[in-house]
Length: 197
Length: 197
Image (cartoon, rainbow over the protein chains, first blue to last red):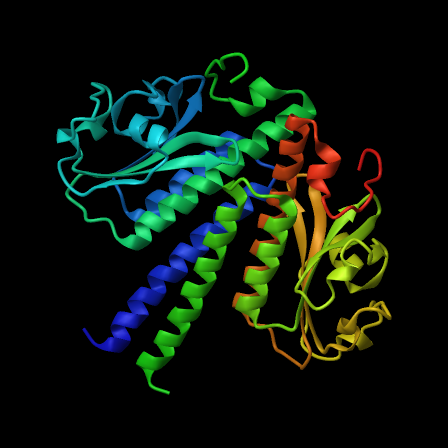
């Protein structure tokens, strides 16, 4: 490949990533429902990563509850729950660290099977904590059906996306408090919220 | 210039911009004082824009109060105040629109002189609203002493920076409310805050 072609491709990829962060930023200042904003972020991540699955879990008490996903199994939203002690996702939440596994993620001893999630057979797993100033707010997972070596750019992007979602969650809570409509507005998927969580 | 060189330069610039947004994102989730976060954002913007001045005004009641600036006149922070009806800055806050003037900004009929700000003689003026879900929270101005045609990239960047600062301000307020230390934490520069603002 020529040098020019190589730079052009890297430029295109970097511009795409920049565009993604700008679009997420717009979601943070628009007057939109939290669920719509989370769905939008997941859609943008799937588009950029060209992955087979993107699952966003949000901390609720001492559980992680699936709050948004690309469309393959919308019924699982609000239903799939993980203890913070369980699975790769729980590990990321506890350690507040990015986790990248390029193949055979399901063989990792920390892995937890869900019979109802097709992602259980996927090879590659990239997972970032969703964090805010309060601490860990959730976890975002990106999975590829086939082995996939994650690039530094993909890892950085998911890290930043995790931070931006953390802000979105905190902003939404702040807004809900100020309008005294907290439970409905914050958890519009109908997941019950533990008192004081 | 060769095609390769051209792509390389554009790539470098785009990567720089991406890095800037990632650094700002990090400020939003770290446990740092609002004033430090705002100063950091201003420093990052000055570095990227290679401008002579960057002034950040925050809405306080029906005024815009200077809250952060690059170091040339730190004494003016908390002192310089503008009514929302005044100047180019007031126009941007009222209209919630980006404003780009590449030369002779001081000739614009909306311009307001401050005898204590050297920026009054600067040629180029780029200004973006600082917004959150609540609405306009302030204005960020970037000025060049000499004429400067702002690129699309610079305009997009300042727009996104304005959104991110808006989130920072809202997050800081939310945090202050939850720890019941609102006035000190939110306005640590010592600017008095109007009740209910």
